[in-house]
Image (cartoon, rainbow, N blue to C red; front, side, top):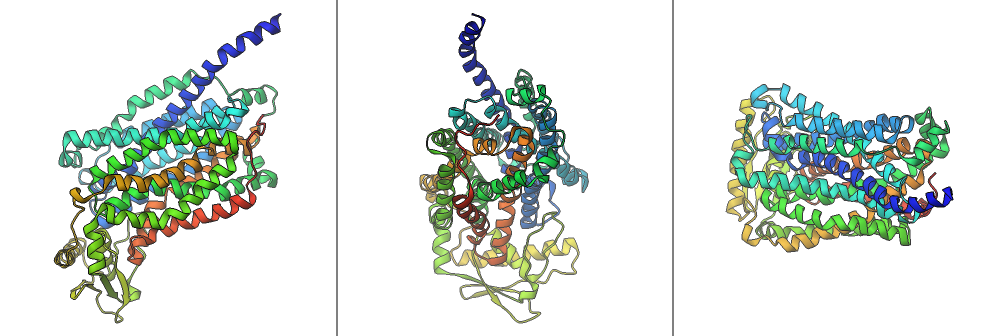
Length: 557
């Protein structure tokens, strides 16, 4: 009778318990993604406030690099909190991570700018980004595992799909808050230096989200799979040694990284972040229009994560993810090229009518990739290339005489750059400005637009093109949490799962914007930056097909 009574009660309580687990885990993860994405979305504003000593292109590169730096520390956070989660418990780990993330984001809103505090300002900003990246490194694994270890086997994909969609909710929240604040305050007040700059508001709002996250997660109990293991005294005492020191587990870590995590980082961040850089910096679309466009595709993406996760419960994880990464691989170059006439037809027309050439001594041309923002890129070649890249203009590189200053040819008009090496900072800034003025005058004369004409921007055409990548990214990302959980044993799941995830998203995905931008400035082709995500996606397309086993329905206890 007692057994019958227990059996009668459990089904009635289980749905409510499952809903609580999913809502609390997903909401907390969404808030953390909000914190992280606010910075990426405001990269251009951050560069003006914290890297104002650098020129516009170098400042943007520094801000993008700092965005990537937060990702660099995610695998470190994965190791720290993965070990904690496997030894102490899932709940304790993600309570700490949400507190660190919320506190660091709130602190960014209180930091002085470069004009107020000098070099100490970017140093403090770097420190906050390190804390953010480390915290997020422990967040995702804990939330995905927590939900999966509560979920029935036949709904594991669907329920963990809500963790995947939390990234969309976080990004939507960041974009909405930024857009509303920007609209109400106006661009000048929003980007203003000093304590009253409106850009601080999205960061300061994280304090409220932090309070909600902590409240919701305090109501959760420990994961049943981990609690059972701990009660039996069978939980891992040495997660690192087991996960990475035993080949049977290490090979699964490498398998996950190569077969789908490499593609996930490349595809997702190209779709939702590099597309913003491409539209604003190269195609000169207004930031407000770009924000609305990214907001629209992000809203459209939210149900697709859950749909593809649900589909993986029916047809298998492997084939859904493989289809997503293959779609992205095929679409990268043609889709981004299609965006140019849709976003800025005048630019496409001018580029076809009057091509631009940079003739320079190859020895004086650098790859403008600087993760710490200290390089000046002061040669005549670098100055010319940065001005053109910043203007969104593709150009052909031609070898010039050794030692001669670089020359920019816009049709029949030639503009000579200036050698900036050896100049003082004020002199270099003035020299750059002079070169930029002359090059832009030549571009304007040739019909190159200073910005995309809002009346000619095909919003819905751009939306349709970007939705190709949204479908690809959600098909790849939706089933991923369930796949990762099913690949690894409970004893080391938190540690082993988190590392390949955050190498893929943190190191490969997080550096998509800054690396692609640097490739463009090096080659002169605004589409050449796409080779970075293309290569990593291609690796996964081949290896996933050959090596990834199907995990749907695997027992995870």
